[in-house]
Structures are given as C-alpha cells and as structure tokens.
Amino acid sequence: MIKVEEINPVNLAHVKHQFYVRGEEISGWALAHGFSAAMVYSVLNGRCKARRGQAHRIAVALGLKETPEEAGAGTSTDAAGGV
Image: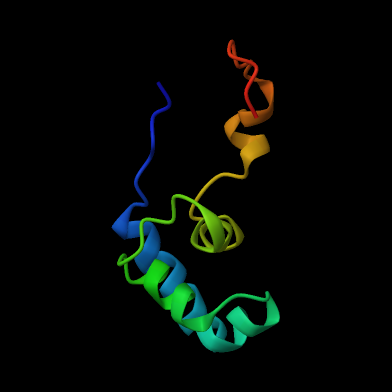
C-alpha cells in the first residue's frame, strides 16, 4: 500500500508568505507556469488535496510535494505489470 502524505498547513503558510515577501502575485505565478489561478488558490488554501492532475503538478511546482523521482516512484516494480 502506498502512503499518501497530506500537505502540511505550515508549509502552505510558508509558500504564501514567500509570495508576499517576493511581492509576487499568485495569479501571475499561475499564468507564468500554465496553471489555473483558481486551482493554485485552491491548493494554497488547502481546499484541494493535490493528489492528482493539475493540482498535484501545482503542489510539486510550489515545492509542497516531492517530484515522482524524489519520491522513488520510478524505482518500484509492479507485480501485476500494470501501468
């Protein structure tokens, strides 16, 4: 069984603070990275668990989650041979 880590609220606050410190707009960051601003706000406000899809990619880009390579996803073998 794969353990799913929840995004820590402290980390969310830290990322939001970093936007404030840099004077960077979250919506501008979203646009520059090709993400929906509404989805970025959902991730940053903890409304979205960011387990898959665009929300997961946002969490990785913000440093809230590990990349699949960092998590070791590419090193496990699937006994069923599935994709």
